[in-house]
Length: 412
Length: 82
Figure 1 (tube, rainbow over the protein chains, first blue to last red):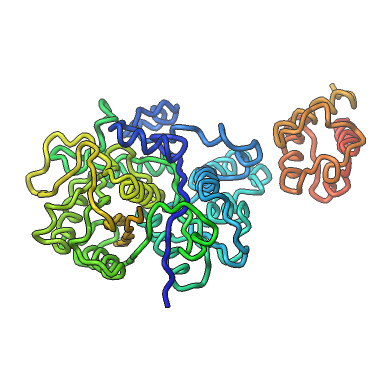
Figure 2 (cartoon, each protein chain N blue to C red):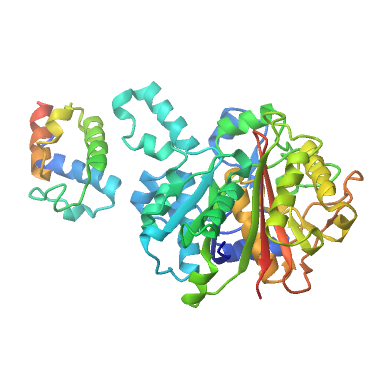
């Protein structure tokens, strides 16, 4: 007997805002979180890309001195998002043995790792900070959250590049659905706006090079898109069995009704152009929800603004939804937020949940000329979503051929 | 030019405050790093390394466990300068 799973808390820190509410308001207003980088290393290394989506509220402004020193920025974002989500859920009274964390990152503590290596080379081993390894490990963000809320039913970290955040939510959903735990804090974060990842992504021609107009650079589905925009931040959800949430009178944003993780086994970075595994992930998540494709009214697409990726996802969407596809309101919110990599799935799950809860699909900005090869109903200004028991899905795909999809249903 | 014990205390207090956020005036000679100031071994190692740089002294790892109070550290550093 499976448990129903609901969302009772949300939290985020993103290029659009230091909390989920500000982020959502700026998203609905069609604002961009992308700006020119002013750090000295941009010119020092003559980086070919000079902009990114930096967290609107610097983490150190809201954390203690010790948290600022002992946590990698990826863990700092995680903790900020998780604290907001946990408070938003009303700090659930749950036995630690029934409380878990599924919190992801795509890359881990890249700032800590590379800074420490510089220190080692320039000043020797004794100057390497003792906390370097626990700060750089990719399970650091999950562990920080676990200690914060005293979660003793397991603290886990999905690592699947840009699918990580969604995979973590899928993992959390399944644990509650199977009755293993009552409450899970789930999501993902990333803090990789560092010259090395920028140089690497730029070298593989994955990043937009629209240096003269950064706020216009992330333009999913636009015919002139030229790559994704790196961003940082994190998102967290409190997932809970419906039984547990109702017993304590918690407010419920939406129900998590399905999830699926599949893999392309095709290429380490390129998506399978046939989109068959991505399509299977969407279909499985919808099937698990007990619904049909015609129940889906909204999709938060992965849509990173790369020429190849947007087409591959569209191909997968066509496989799943066929003639029904033009009836679905599709939002590509990376147009505003940029791409939070391992954090993307978490903040996009929040957007999907809020779209259902507030019956408003958020806009896709910078869509001046829809790519003629993409026949989608892309939402370009906030759009009302009608009906009850409506379904929405959030897609995430990552290097390595990872596909992760989560399906949500409205409850209000 | 070796610093006086009072000057070492001032310099060490700055390092401790920078690492932990503890108010400088709370950092006094008779205070225990662990029991009074609640400084753990990880912060202690960072303080030791920063003190080595600041005062140009060597504080061997096996010596650190003997530095129980702020006064112990001030005495060790003051002598080690010479």
